[in-house]
Image 1 (tube, one colour):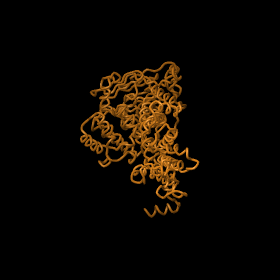
Image 2 (cartoon, chains in turn brown, red):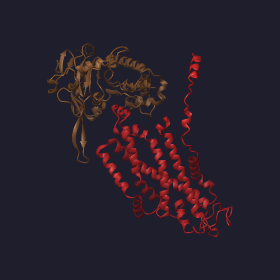
Image 3 (spheres, helix red, strand yellow):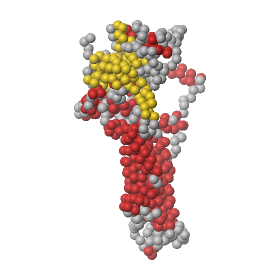
Image 4 (spheres, each protein chain N blue to C red):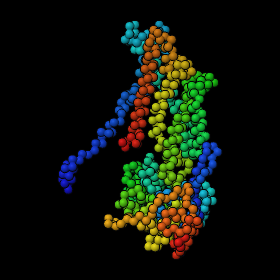
Length: 322
Length: 298
């Protein structure tokens, strides 16, 4: 491995306390949104995070972006712990990590022109003079496949796909090293999804970007990711290079997820391999969190929580079966 | 292809949905805007259109009735008061005082309310609780008592009215701003602004505030109506503007003593107040309808 780690997450936990009381508040429980996950992202590569809704994918993104402080654990950006950053360091760290969110109808400020939206990160970080920023906006617009006259319009005059292009242009404006994409395609039509996905892949090659892409759509993630992590109820069930994960899934949850991907054949039988609901993250089951729904659960699974094990190079699973 | 398409739509008798019909349901603003037009016309051109100096008294022409009543003269259309001052001129000039007082109050309590509301909604937690409880306490004290206190300390004048109404009215503004801010700060564009590195102040000033201006405009318009009535009340009680200045509330108070034989001294200032208040209210309702994005989508 010649490529260096750009982001490394170690034992990250994010709990949301539930409090009771008015003035003297007591913590009566924690929603364990993210519980002890670790992963690395290499420079220029893409990590996909998949999982059901409520499994902690977006919380992970928020913590990585510095929007919410982690409860414990470390996030290292190029070897430096972001929790230790001073205000000025945090400010310059933000130049290196940008985000694109799910719904392009809500992620663009409705009262600003496109050129203001795209150039905002530059003006906040005082990069270049106004004219240079304007030139950069033009450059970015053509990069994402929009035309210069779009700069003077307001977001509501665009379609969903175009808005997502604007959001991507904005994320690129500071030349970040990393972009976190939180469900970037799920609000778009299928035909537009492919366009945006190809745009992202092109941009990644051109600028050597590192992506963390969060999705519930396995097909999308497979197309773009080098590594894929599968999350279940706040933990990372399995993380592996994408070809290994798709050809040889290990964790029973991953197996079930892959089976549930719809097949384009009306005669194909749909097997429901998972039963039951996702338990509450407020009170996750003891032992392995997946055991109440796991078809291969053993007695051991109910007692002890499995550790992350590397079964082949780069393929980590947290399951007692291996 | 085109002909085919037409055939099919005819066969299925598809009619395009009538979009314009629903849009017409928004109330017509003409009456409100007309009243406001008259009001602002008086404010702007008071010196040109008023037939007399509103302060010039002529005791020989005291308490003349309106021109159409017996004893009235065409020279004084709405009659004169007990000092012989022309009613019409005083009403026209009085509009200026109403505007100054209401805009002054809105500026004061708008500023306090917006700042506190933004801070409260944006930071949440203990700060929010402190500011909201403060506004509860503030609202639980009757405004008139606070105003009476201030007037007795500072002395009755138009300035006192502006200051005292201004500092009693902010909780309503703060609450509305806080509510809007609470919902806006969770929106994705605000989160992205933080990712871009915007400071709290930058987010409040350039992402949250522009999105609450509509609401504030509507709120201000409706509040102005209330302020005009309140300031007239204060003048009527002798706590507001002092004679000989032109103020509708003051004219009411002065005319009250002569109400049994000079009905015009209270009626016309009263009508002026009513028309202005109705104008502001109707316009405020209309603004709320057209500026609400949900209404526009309907």
